Length: 69
Image (tube, one colour):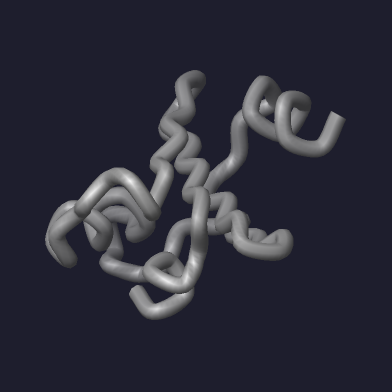
């Protein structure tokens, strides 16, 4: 949770869609944040990447293309 809270931007892939969360303007509860970054087993979803102040959780071709060109 600390890693997510230290990030400015959070990108979460779920299936074919992804969500962007601006951590500076959106106030997420710990429960909401945990629900976004953990899988069914309760562990951090893979792959998880940190690039500067951006945390990327999960995989989506579209999301990776947008973020990493």
